[in-house]
Length: 540
Image (cartoon, rainbow, N blue to C red; front, side, top):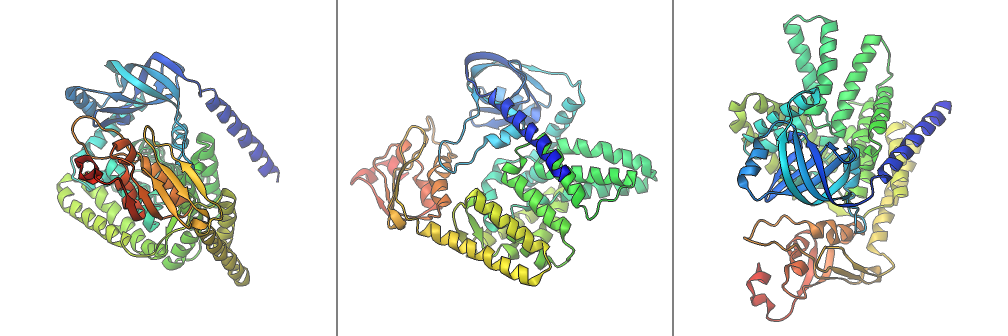
């Protein structure tokens, strides 16, 4: 109890301090002229400019994210080829990060705050660019990470994105677009708990040490230095932090001859360190899955893959439903198939291709085959849309799930099973029979999108979808306005079907997201003004 109270007071003070610090950065400043320091691997090339995340600014030395329009393709290419820290002189409006404006919309601030980014720069104008010399260790590490990212760019998709994602922790556009099927299959945790490349990395260092006859003390020093460096190279994700820190703690424990029983104590230390450095880690699905599922793996004595997969399934259901609102009934089967596939084939193959580019064309065919298999699995029936349970219900079901996977008392386990599944059935029935109606206006920017739902879901009507105006030549549609607003909200309350979709007129800001709505929701009937279907813009 003394330990619990001490840690509670310490972390309570720390979280309060962080909250107060963030509150101090919620002011807006117009027409500011500041200098931003940016790592080369934090510059993303977009269609008409660059997206950056600065680690320092001359205003108050805090992190800033910004989009900088660039008209010159030559200037864009110079940013693409750069591998040194940059000092950008810019002008614009400095303000707090945008908060969600629709119910159940994803809060991007939690990720940015964890990365020490507190500002967003709007209406940005680039004034001057200057390369900074490679003086610090941090600058050198980001320099080489950019070089390694450029190395990944020489491969074709999907190998390019697999290399960047698995080895360097870089979330490419390809991975973002294809992550939906991993979430639907319930195997998104493969990228949250694996840390398998860290295991391969440590084993590689040990093998090289044995071949070179390096003594144990020197090998320990090498591992202690190399692992933090790889953490930076790997993108600093939550799962990578957990894996690297856990290995470092075990190495120190072996050196000091400390005995951690079953690894749970080491897991607790890693979690406390991560919470201190990033208080938002457990407010993200990746952090929740990474720590909860790794705890289940560490605490299990069984070696049965089926039992372990089922226990992981029980624990991840509340987390996945809270963030994604749907779960696949075949997730246990998918885990049995995909976990050994990734650990024994995908990760080793990606590492081989990265180290020996001559093998890339062959290995890319293997990755294409894996992607094809995942797409076929995603088409299997069994995906259930439930809705978003409340936080308290998620906590309650998590406690029950953890008790089920940790207890050996069969009578208690059977009772808990009944409570667990009956609670989910009751939750699903509640969302299907919501006893109240609503008229909801979604924030879609300039246009309109309205939901009209009768009590007990007797009818669901959507008027317009919103959309983003795009000027100039017709470009690939990348807008996700409806997915972050109306589609996301409807799925969060367990609705997958719209009885009537009304498209009032052909303006893009009113019906531009109709394609996204039709692809993600079942639409019973479509209403639009007579004659408007003859116009090219409406048909497109």
